Image 1 (tube, rainbow, N blue to C red):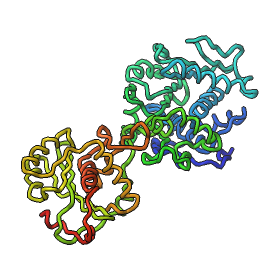
Image 2 (cartoon, one colour):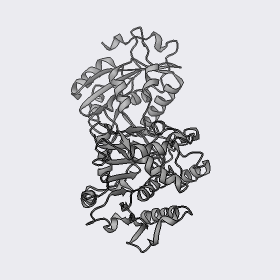
Image 3 (cartoon, rainbow, N blue to C red):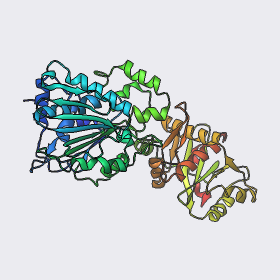
Image 4 (cartoon, rainbow, N blue to C red):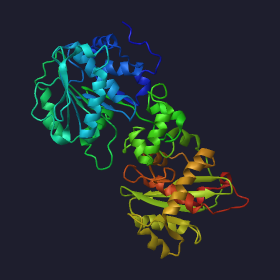
Length: 482
């Protein structure tokens, strides 16, 4: 029987991160999918691929993910309940006596999922397989029983559901972004006595955690998977590239494989209208994790802007200074009417040496922008005492510098000296958006090695008003900095 009957993307084309355990030699999915097609259920190609790897088995016949589970961070409206819900139904049809529990954090989510699953099993061709009075709707006792003895039980973790259960074959942790380690300790042991021929299997489904969510378990599983530290876990993440414009409709398909053939444009726009906050949209609809943030400049574009730079002895037009993880970075900017050229010209862990370096290399009117907070702030009085034009960078200055980075790299008028330290800083820096989703600054919580990138923004802001008539960045020289 062919499993590839729909012309939709493959799983490998849909998933941003797909990590599959080694040693899979077969899968229980063809048997399960045969049951589903018999009752009129079909999957898109990427959903079939997910089923194949999720139910993949090693040579001993056990699920390859029976230890680490199946971890699937998917955005909203991708078809999570349809995909995994039908997998559970198909498994219940194929394996008599299968015992599964579906648990969400919130009771409301559990109830909504239960209603969706009721609709699935009440379809004309599925209903005959359900036991007489097999659908129980009493709160706290929501379940679907099959005529062959299989059962799916539903409950909310916030109400203590799942504790003390045993001999569970499949566990589906919905809303896994709100899944504390205590809940795992309470519920995962329920699969220790699983009687299913392929072993117990645990699914972790959800979106990236919100600030304040107890998302330690979900986040830890993701971190271990991306670090290559999992041998018995399927990890399938669907998410947008962090640099994707939130409102670029041409990119919707990259984070929602059901768009537009199953989730129409109006559904996406309705969701966008009801999730106006930019960060929430990135997390909920685009699947972008907080730790990933949004890249400031793509690595490829930054490489394209490398340039030999100045060639005479003219001094730069501004300095920007910033600190991160105990390291101070000084970025110089040469400016003319058209172009900007930036370079890290000094870096050190001692602030007094940074001051000693700047003083003889800066003119009295040359702007030196320094944050008015953090480790670099004491540099301000040190330079001002030497009658240098050191200024405390305002939020407006930072915002202007950030805008100039984007505008300059987009248009090509911002070039640089191709230094690894500045490239690494940009690669590790992340954007933090304002509530309007447009203005941004550096997200200091998720950025790494942030000093050179922030110092560059400050140097660009400092040089914003500089006009050097008759000079261009192509003819200036940084030898004056020696």
